[in-house]
Each structure stands twice: as structure tokens, then as C-alpha cells.
Amino acid sequence: MSDNVPFEIQEEIIKRLPIKSLIRFQLVSKAWKSLIGSSHFIADYSAPHPQLQHLLVRYDHGHTSKPIYSSVVDDHTLVNRRVSLTPPPLVNWLRDSIIIGSSHGLLCLHCFYGDDNRFGLGTRMAVIWNISIRKAIAVVVPSVPDGEIYITFTSFGVCPETSDPKILKITEIKMWSDTESVTLIPWQVEVFTVSSGVWRCPYTTNLPRKSVQFSCSQVVVDGFCYWLATDRSTIDPGFKAYNLIISFHMTSEEFTEVNLPDSLIYEGSVDYLNISNLRDSLVVLDRNTEENVCYVWSMKDDGVSKSFTKLFTIYSPDATLLSVLEFRRSGEPVIEILDNDADPRYVPYAPSLLAIYEPKSKHISNLGINGIGSFFVHSYKETLLLLDQPDFTVYDKGKGYIVKQRAEILSLLKHTNKVEMQGAHEMK
Image 1 (cartoon, one colour):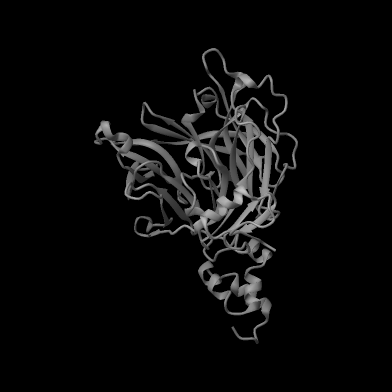
Image 2: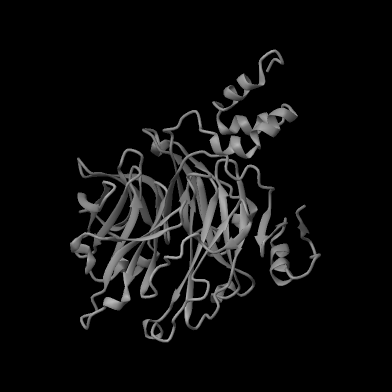
């Protein structure tokens, strides 16, 4: 670009470029590299096609030991525009990982890390992955204080005010019988922010009640992280539990309880419910396995109270409805189904299908993706977040390290108390 063009005008032009072009244009000049990599540019950047949404699909094919990742453009060409993804090493090195959440174009995965992780031991590790720029960072999650009494899970979201990715670690009492003997849960909630590189206590002191048991179903919607939960103190002799939703404000870090629709409060186990994001609104998914349907409820927030309205019902007469995984930008659910003609003796090993459900016509369209095991589908938009993070960064105990082999991470986890570690170099 001509030096006669004021840099302020150049900046406005650069802001409108697609991400792939921005990555290449960092090589044009030091000024452009400094601009594109600056924190304010990364936070303010908006892609030139703000409505363009992608779907990340992860599944097991049965022929490979590692999961397969694909990206699909969420538009009318959905079926024909699937691209295979090569995850960065920090993602590939994970074993038996689960996806705990997505927010602002970032995906967060979690697993036990170490030689003994097959047995649920080892060190907890979370990896944040920017799919658009193929960059990932890893964060060591502090261990639970007493694994016999407590259990810990992690959640993820991006603060909309600061564009700072956050990982939440929540510790709860494992068995309800231990709640009376425990007066205070140590380190009940901790927050990790990428900008600081350290774990800390949340800003708020109104932590969840110790009788609340979180489920693994979580979603980020409009600046809030939501979980399905159960209040175990209300379990009656008939084993009915009070189901509810817990919300966490990503900016103020305040916890709030949200009541479910009356018909779902005592709808048996919370395991039959799920939550998702439908056009920046929270929806609750109530799957009825006997009737092979799923009811979709949408939360309305008028600023004073929150209420739920049933939007539509998902029917699958010719195939078993296994789960509702995500919603397209158009509002159509992405579902996982199993062919009714599958031999029941091999159902656990039979390939399930990814499909789109059209609520008005009740038509189901097969996407042509078959998998064995669980599908994960998450929508995302392009972002520059993590661009200013060095490649192969692993955060542990308030320090960032550069590691380029999986063995170096194992060494790091064993020797983080030493100043120098074999194969790992502390960042300056």
C-alpha cells in the first residue's frame, strides 16, 4: 500500500480484510505486523462477513485412533462446503479429550494429561483453540484438594467487555452424604484469564450453594455462561430432584439461579435435559426417549424476570433421535440420529448420522457424515483472539512455557518447581 496513504486510512482498510489475508499481511511491514498483532486491533477486529458462521464437527470414524475434525460453512451450501481440519499439536497431543465449550470463535478442550490418564489420573489440562488462525494454548488446571470428597469440572467463555478468554474451575461435593460434614468447599471457584496467565478467585462472593450439583451441559449466550444443575437438598423419597439453571456473568462474575419451566423442574434426572444457544437465546432441550422426540424451550429475559416458551418439537419417525448437538444460524437444529434398521446387537458400534431438522416441514436432511461414538458440533465465527500468544504456550502456576513436543509437557508437569526444565524454556 502506498506510503502516501495515511496510516489511519490503511488501518481502516486492513480492518475489513478477511483473517487469512491479515495473517499473510503481517509479513508486509513491521508497522502492519505491529498493528495486526496489537491487543486493541485483535479485540476490535470484526470479520468482513459478520453473518458468516461455521460449524466445527468432531467425530470418530472407527478407522483412525484420533478424532476427525471438519469445518462446514453454515449457509445454503452446507452439504458441499466441508473442509478437513488439521488441529495444532497442543490439540493433537490430547488423549480422550472432551470439548467443554465454545465462545467468540474459540474452542476449549479438556482432558487428563499424563502417562496414567487412561485411569482418570494425571494432570488436568485445558486447551484453547482458535480454529481460524490455527493457534492453540494450553492451561494446567489446579488439582482438586481431596478426590475422595470433591469433584472438579471446568467451563469456558470469553468476556464480551474485554475479549479475554476465561476458564472456570468449579469444585463441588461428590456425595450428598458428605455435605453436612463440609462447611466450606476449599477453592470452590477459580478463574483463569489468558491476559493474566494465572488462576484467581472470582470477583463475587455469592458462590453456588454447596447442595447444587452441576451437570456437564453448559453453553455461553450473550455474555453469560449457563449450566444445568440439580439441587440435591430437595431430593424427596421418590428420588425427584429439583432441576434448575445456574448462570455466571462473564464480566461481573456473579452467579445467579434461573428457574426452569414448571414441567421440567421435577422431570426426573437432569441428564435427559440439555441447553444450547439458538440465535443468541438460551434454549433448553427436553428429549423424550420413549416418544423419540425433543421439545425445544426458549428463555425470554425482559430485564426483570426470565420465562420459558416452548418453540417447537423435533420429530424423527424413521430414525432414533440420539441428541440435538447445535443450531444453525437459520435456527435449524443439527441432530444425531441412528438408522432404525441397524442391527440392535451392534447398536453401540453402529455408525450414527449427522442431519439437519427443518421445524416447519419436519424434514430431515442427511449431511453425509457418519461416525462411531459421540459427535461434537459447535458453531463459530472467525476471530483473531490468541494471535498475540506465542505458539506452543503452556501456562502453569502463573508462568508461560514454550513446549514443542508432548514429552516436554510431561516433563514440565513433573518439574515445574525447577527454574530450568529439560526441553522447555520459560518465556521472557
